[in-house]
Image (cartoon, rainbow, N blue to C red; front, side, top):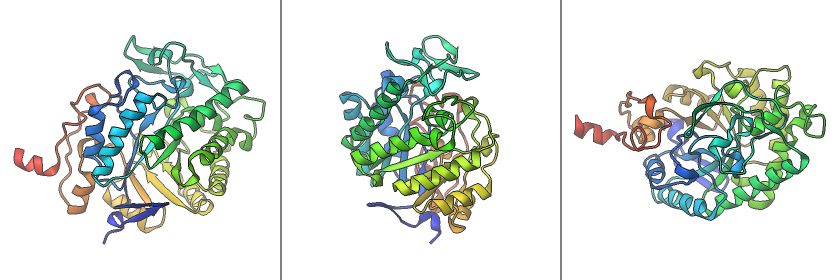
Length: 365
C-alpha cells in the first residue's frame, strides 16, 4: 500500500489515511456563526484522514476577517457540534484551528467593543476586506498590556475547552501566516522590552504559555501547533534568527508533548522555500507527528512520507474543488481542474459546496 493511504495513530486517534485537509479560510460564517452550509462543506470532505478547520476566533478581539467563525458563545459551540457530528458520522476526525488575527484584523469585522491587539503598535502594510466598507487599511494595533496578554491566554484556553465540548478531536493553534502568535515570534513585529520581547525565549513565551495552559485544561494529546517559518504573508519579513527561533520552538513544544507540529511551506505561492536543513532540524527536535503542507500533489506527498520528512501531508486548494480528494487519489481518478477563484471568500454555496464528487462528474458527462 502507498504510504499516503496507510493508517496513522495520532494520540488516541486512528486516522484512516495520512491525508490532511489543511485549514483554509472560506468566510462563510455569517455573523461569525457556523451554519448548515459549513456543515455540508466539511461533511463532504470527511474522506480525509484528518480535517483541520478554518481559522476560528477564540474571542471577539480575534475576529479580524469578514465572516470568520468564532467559538466563544453557546450558540457557536452548538453550531460547531453539528459540524463535528457530521464529520464523525462519515468516519472522519477533525481538529479546530484557533486563530487570532492580531494586527491584521479590523474592528469593522468584529462586534462593537472589540479591539485590534498586537505585541507592539506596529501597523501592517496593506488592506483587509470588510463587508461594511470594502477594502480598508490595516489599523495601528494597540500594544497589548500584561493584562491583555493574560486575558488572551485565558480566551484561548476557554476556546479550547469549548472546542472539546463541541465534539472536536483536538485543537490546532495557528502560529503562522502573520497572525497574533507569529507577531510575537518575529522581532520585526514584536518590539517589546519586557518578558515577552527581545530574546528568542521571550518572543516564544506567549505561544508556549498558551500551550501550557491549554494542556492543563484539555490534555497535551489534543493540541497541535501550526508554524510557517520563512512566511511573508500579512506583511511579515525575514530576520536573522529565523532558524534559531524555530529550532527553539520545536524543542520546547516537544518537551510540552503536543500531539503534532504542522509545518507550512508557502513557496508554491511565491514565497521563500522552507529550507530542507530547517525541516531536518525540526524533525530531529520534535519526536511526535509532523504534518507537512504546501503545494502537495500525490507524488510530493509520497516523497515526504517515504523520506520521513512528514508523517501526515496537508492538501489545501485541491480540497476546494475536489471534495472527495482522498478517494480520487486512492482510486487514481482524475482531479477536477476547474477552480473558481472568484468564489473562494464569498458567502454562498457557489464555489463552496457545489463542486461534484467523481461519480457525479461521470453522470453529468
